[in-house]
Length: 356
Image (cartoon, rainbow, N blue to C red):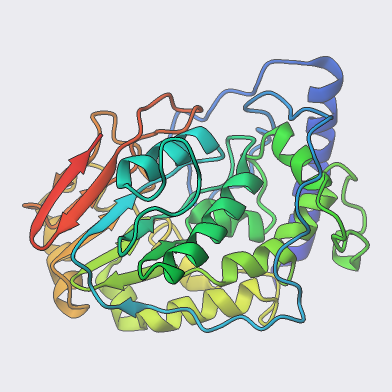
């Protein structure tokens, strides 16, 4: 039988050596793969540990790790009512400045603050808060606080899990920056002595302890859906195929949540681990053809929903739509790693428009 834990440890050892080498020699970041990233189920881990400058050693420790194992986690919601105004935005990849710019465009926070100002706004972020940047903890904790503030104000902020959140929980750390390792080394009270991390390089161990199933940041991710239907719009990081609807959107969210809570082993549910999973598929986001659009129509009819909003694949010309407006592509590469500009998608009734 395939030994997932052994694979995770092997990756971690390699990453630890690479990060240490990066920090000692200040070498240039490893280049990005020329082809799109693929699910680790079909692509071996790559050793790109460095993609940005290391975090400052004098950075504050920050708040305690979130959500202890003693605190219960409510079941994930899969379907919620619509709202007069819904706004969505895509991948932020460790760039707090880009995340705040998107929140400001949405009207969720003021230009000079980071408290919720959106009132009854319903806001959706389609996943990939992690990797490729150094501000991941700040983003996770900002989004978590804003979700509470939005709820108290009569609105909502729904944050989805993308492939990079699930990769980190599975021990696939190939896109973590040196600063991303250093930042989680400052989280207090992490279970770094867990036997699962025996033999893992010390520089990698805190991050693995934070995100491994049952860890404090994995439990934070467990509060978030993988697929969400808001009124007549369905949101997912990669996309929803007819087979996912047949499998059950609620079942997908439940299985991912149980895995992140450490209730179903270290390996992710098979339904989210393949290249055509809801967090990995690119069927709708890379110039979909007539066959892809027909597949989309079947998925929307089965949900049911009028449209789908996805991230995951950078759109160099800003937010795009395809399949006669039935799918909207909101990953604009706004993170510093990609150099794009922030943009959000506004849905008011049947009127859908990008804002930038």
